[in-house]
Image (cartoon, rainbow, N blue to C red; front, side, top):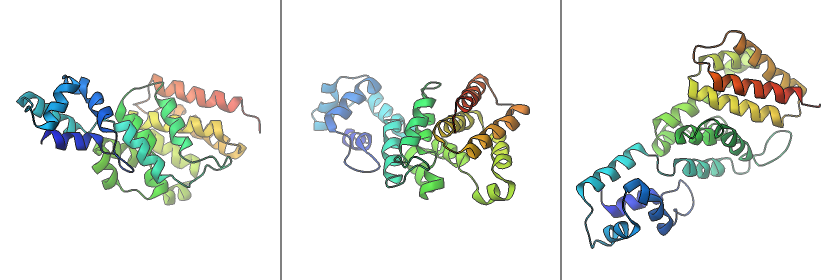
Length: 233
């Protein structure tokens, strides 16, 4: 990979114009451990990067974490464009944005934050696992897949039973995102029935807590219940 190819990849956005060149170079400075001048001289061809720097570029591209959250936001906003939230008619992208905000109180893991932006794109926008994996890597794509509901199974079992079984089977990272999703949904709903369904889901899950259940999950569950207790319908 040449420095020019690496920069082009680092500037990539799923939709719209790429990230600005100078801004991206500044962003890369701490990741590559070199100065802006070094990077610009590499791009101009005046100086070749060291073998160590080239290997680092390859590693960064392989890990696919450069601007992961920003790219996920761009992707989610594009895919949810024109969709609105039930009850409020707010732009749908306000929901994943709020979920990311809640999640950031508990983790700074970019893969989880990216998945939170994307968590409804398979279910509501027809995005495939392969598309997400190619753009954001298999871990993020798998989290989104795990958070996607099987609508036929949900209809067959009923929402409370289906969701409690689903939550009990989620790995810890996906469960954290799902609870942040439920917290934002509880906060935004104007439906007593929907709110009481969330309460029933949590009751079932907490009654027989899954082995991955941890302090973060318990804190989020309590926040959901406290939000419910403060609701006025």
